[in-house]
Length: 397
Image (cartoon, rainbow, N blue to C red; front, side, top):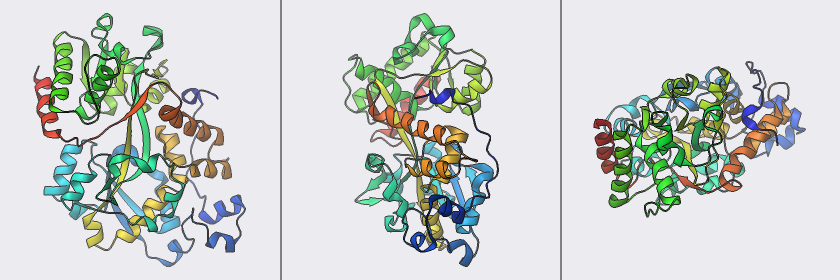
């Protein structure tokens, strides 16, 4: 298989690729299309009035100008706002603020569903109205935090597993989180200024190398969390880290400027660094990855305003292939369905089928074929308030 991250980028153009065209490419007659569960009805956009859905989600979940086909297919216009991807402020605004007054659907890293559901800030999805759910990878349907009390509150529309970005010309091959804490690389490593990522990475390292006994790295007990945070605080005091980076731009800049040679972070940073001429790689760690999903949430306010039917059509559309193709090219992220590949094969002038086949294999390999295990991120562990307190202590060191 050709290395995914070295595969040349395809220039995307605004699509006029309609649902009718897709059905023709796939060889379906009009009669057969009527019963095709994988694709929404052709008549929705023709018979319904245009609905605007206000979407408040992680910035990586937007497809920018390519929302146009959603409007053509489903008569839905997306008004997108970036929620900053920090679960604490998002949850606070959902529960105590005006987010339900302003937004119809949300997108957040998985784990917040239980709390938001208990606070009546989000509503369960009616999965019978999302027929493309049938085509979602079976193991993605079993992500532990998307359900609460038997009902589904999160639809995983983006899925991936994270590790480390590194510069092989500086450090050779990196295959362990030990590199982040290696005293030989003092001042040349970094982690993100977010406990939702950096604590679990550290916990994975300590667990899998038998340094600290840890059960679930994504949901630490009070004693486990204390051991992890004391470890991080000691290394920060010793000057191990160049910085704790905050936000996409700083993350890219640290690698592109070669200020940092190894850091935990997001896979798209590798794409961005390579576009700037930097030889960057994404590590396959022997200890395993941090698995995560960005989940689509149905806000209570959407139901109160009568926009929930459109929200379900949006969820179904995002799982239908086109959204996954665009998101893969823009972000290197994966919508967990093979319909992405089907759409790419049906429209090779717009999408490169080999790229999307490789992307799917690449993500699946992280979870099943490569080294180590996958430890699921959880943005709302049982002791999340203690996590916040410990992280503030680290910031103050």
